[in-house]
Amino acid sequence: MAAKEQQIQELLEPTVEALGFAIWGLEYLSQGRHTLLRLYIDGENGVNVDDCATVSRQVSSVLDVEDPISGKYTLEVSSPGLDRLLFQLEQYPDYAGEWIEIRLRVPFEGRRKFKGTLKGIEGEDIVVLIDEQEFLLPHSSIDRAQVKPRT
Image 1 (tube, rainbow, N blue to C red):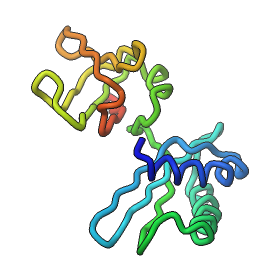
Image 2: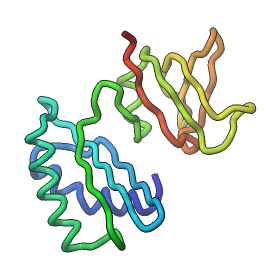
Image 3: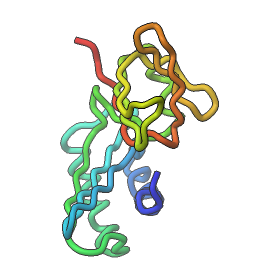
Image 4: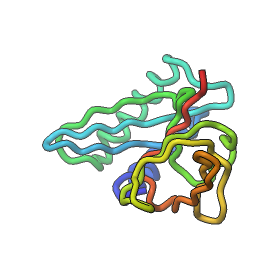
């Protein structure tokens, strides 16, 4: 996780937890003069639209006071959904056996995109089975990992 994302997550965590939710992850996307902050929340009983609105109002107030983002930004609060992004290493084991798509920051064995079955983790590596071959992908190299439910 980038330093800015870490700073924002640490700032918002107490507020989100006080509302009965956990931060599943966040995306901080700076595009020119505009920034998008997408906050994924999860709860024991899931998350609905009203939960997202409540968290959005509270988090927005914290961001207004603390001002960690310079310039204009858009705040989105969402549930992780079925095709959830995975952010932390400890989130992966719960999805072992599921189809996963991973994009790396830098190529590994000549490629950046991997699609296959998540086998689990080994140390700091994510184990993915693709066409009967296991790949150990360093978690620190992952740009994006998303669980894709099979239909």
